[in-house]
Amino acid sequence: MPKTRFQNVIFTILMAFVMVYGMICYNIALNRGGMSNQVFLLAFHELVIMLPIAFILEFFIVDKLAHILALRLVTPGVDKPVFIVLAISAMIVCIMCPVMSLAATLLFKDAGSEFPAVWLQTTALNFPMAFFWQMCYAGPFVRLIFRTLFKKQLAEH
Image 1 (cartoon, helix red, strand yellow):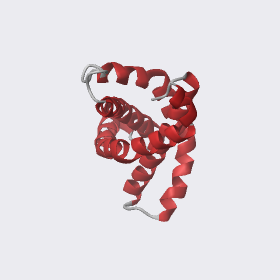
Image 2: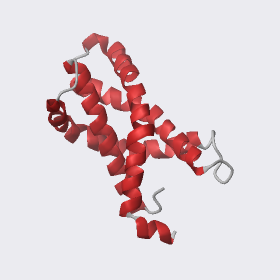
Image 3: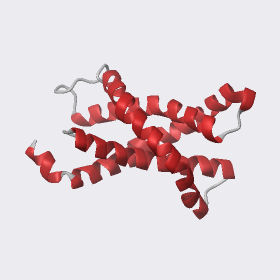
Image 4: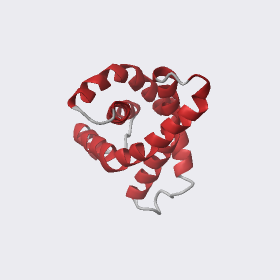
C-alpha cells in the first residue's frame, strides 16, 4: 500500500504502534488475570521498549521476508488485492509473533532454565490474538488511517 519510503516508514510506525500496544494490553491482562482500565496505562511502560524493537524488525527484515513468503501463495495481477494484503499480513504475524514473544520473554519474564518452555507458551498464547487483532482490527484500522493521511499522494499513483 505505501508507495514511497517515507510512506512505508509512516505505515510501519502506525501498524507497529497499534499491534504492539494491543498485544501489550493483552499480555498484561493475561498476567493480571483479567482486563481493567489500569491495563491501558500500564501498557505504555512496555510500549517505549517494544515499539522500537517491532519497528526495526518489521521495517528492515520482516516486511521483505513476509512479501517473499506471501508471494508464494498469491499472485499480483491474478489474485484479488484483498487476498494479497491478507497473505502479507498473515506472513507478518507468523514471523513477528514468535520474534516479539522472544523479546518479551527475554525482557519481561523471569524464565530462567524454563526459557524455551516460557517462550513457546508465550508465543502460543499470543499467536491467536495477534492473528485476529491484525486481520480484523489493527490492519483495517491502520490502512484506513494511512489512506486518509495520504489520500492525495495515493491518488496520484
